[in-house]
Length: 214
Image 1 (tube, rainbow, N blue to C red):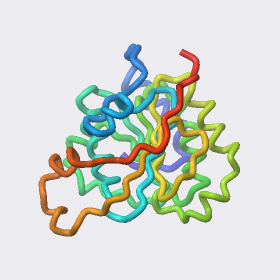
Image 2 (cartoon, rainbow, N blue to C red):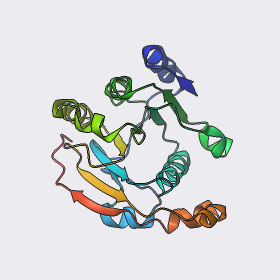
Image 3 (tube, rainbow, N blue to C red):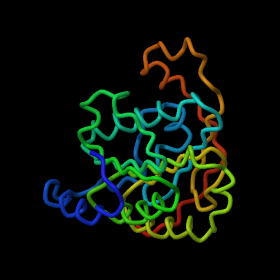
Image 4 (cartoon, rainbow, N blue to C red):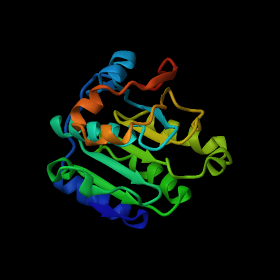
């Protein structure tokens, strides 16, 4: 489902009507199904930001997204993908994995941050992925820190996980940070996606104590 930020208010109303809010788990993490990541942190922290750095093309960021789609589909959790460069290719995924996805197509970092600030306040969602991988590193580094801390403060009272994918360490307010730094060879891309996902080994860079309100 693709939309633009100026239609998000209408989208939130539609989501609330189609998917009434249900009681969420009292656990503070969302399991991803990626063994190395879940073992390191117990999953994605809820009410917090996880930054995943993709330092090179083909290093596994789309495998991570595919696994998040699978994990949230299994738990009937709605996922929003904020696509800052309008580069997501839905044809790369099984159609069944996309039925619970809200795809927000943006044309730059400013619109994507605005969309994230709105969507992480939506109780109909359990996971928001803000994809900034194709935004130039110089632009990300020039973003005032208060923008990232604003997202942190907005997500803290929620029972939602916010994942921000970047090309370099960017988000000072991230509670957890992982780095994907090993490109897959071309012949590996012909292998089974499940095996490639299981073999992913994101490098932990940060894990802070969670201080969000319960």
